[in-house]
Amino acid sequence: ARLIEELLRQRPEDPTARFLAVESLIRDRKTPQVALDSLRAMSVSTDEPRLATRYGLLTAEAFDSAGHRDSARAVLDALATRFPESPAIRQALERLH
Image (cartoon, rainbow, N blue to C red; front, side, top):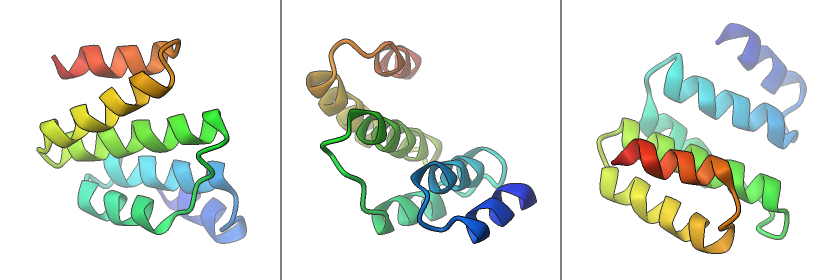
């Protein structure tokens, strides 16, 4: 988690670094609400499928970790509608069952 924080400090505008930091908040620090707050503060281009998908998957994971399964499912359902070919989205939906 400390290395991720250092990476984010060095590259605060890099979406990959920001996503890694959010992932660390969810998985390492076990603070999904902080992760959701960080995601809300980010601006991600919805025109770029890779970024939009990663943002949505992390949002769903944070909601699920916070005990908000319905919110996680809503995020994943919207992603699946937008990106029906994505195996990562299908897998995330299967994990919610």
